[in-house]
Amino acid sequence: MSAPEDPKGWDVRQDDPPHLGICVRDMQKEDVSAVHGLEQACFSDAWSERILDEMLGNGMDLCFVLEEEREEKQEKQGEQKRKTVLGYVNIRILGEEAELMRICVLPSARGRGMSRLLLARALTEMGSRGARSATLEVRAGNAPAKQLYQSHGFVLEGVRKNYYRDPVEDAEIYWNRNI
Ligand SMILES: CC(C)(COP(=O)(O)OP(=O)(O)OC[C@H]1O[C@@H](n2cnc3c(N)ncnc32)[C@H](O)[C@@H]1OP(=O)(O)O)[C@@H](O)C(=O)NCCC(=O)NCCS
Image (cartoon, rainbow, N blue to C red; front, side, top):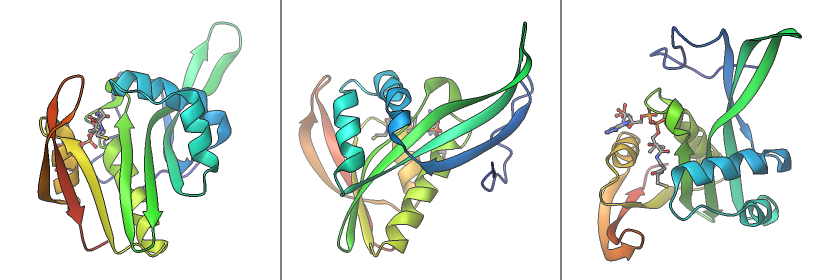
């Protein structure tokens, strides 16, 4: 498994089991259950397994998961390699315009640069598939996500008042017009 560039050493914590690597790869049908777990941990309007399953085959959406591999000591089997899906991103490309539909990281894995790896992959895929610009909408109060988007060239271009429910909140519309 190849580890993507990790200049800040985000993926290493001293108290974690031995770290073997991180990869961002295409989401497969077998990942639906893990991604559904991510959805439930990260969003108040979590997508169902059926929606996730349909998304994989609809020809419009592209999904990538971030998977971490660690070596863990087991009572009887000795050392075992364990892979865990820590995050995922979903994008949609329509001609020269792309949309970031979803990005999330498991709460216990946040603040380690994981979302940057996912977003970098998403932007690379958008560009290589012909998109020139990308848009997204985000809750006005979602500071971590807004910081992530701004540091990847997204600029605030509009606001939809009271767009979100549970709780009610404005949506901010961001564009990156230089993919
Ligand atoms: C938004 C989210 C994906 C960020 O994931 P993460 O892996 O913790 O973020 P990273 O560690 O990669 O940090 C990304 C950037 O956000 C910043 N950031 C992280 N946590 C932050 C916080 N609590 N407050 C402000 N900025 C924060 C980092 O400093 C970094 O900024 P930089 O790009 O300028 O260096 C994660 O918080 C999440 O899954 N949230 C719930 C789902 C969600 O809101 N998704 C977005 C809407 S679809």
